Image 1 (cartoon, rainbow, N blue to C red):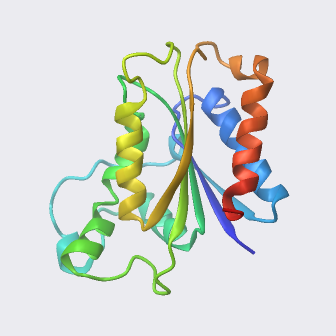
Image 2 (cartoon, one colour):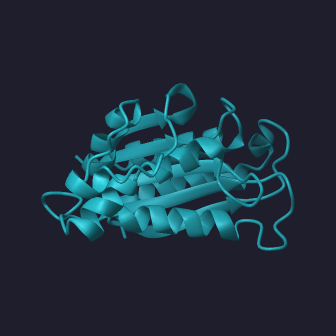
Length: 192
């Protein structure tokens, strides 16, 4: 059975990005995958302190909840990430998780070790929500961050859903097409 990890990047429970990611995870389960959820807002994840300890063994020296996340990322066949856009980027909570994956970067580029022992390539999919309309490259910064994150994890960026004009909590429920699109994206994770 394929394993899907859903990373919830919003500090706000049950907001638009949470709703869309839950729909995508329902689609993945309908496609036969097992699903695990990582709610970053419920974890204690310190920012990377640039100590470079990971350059020695590929392991982060900071002892916090991120130590539980690392094995989940390695075990995943697909990683679905959702975040609202703040100042044209992902949330601070999600960015802290991403920055702490510096240990994977060190493992891959300094130590020349595989991210996964079986060298399999995972899949990555990104869901972003924003209150504003999609102008001025609103999602460009967040997409670049996510592509880099997935690349370091040896996960192929298979696509994204970039959803604008979702200001109010739960506004996505008024746009059935987005809910169906998220479900379909989750279901299709292993069919490409």
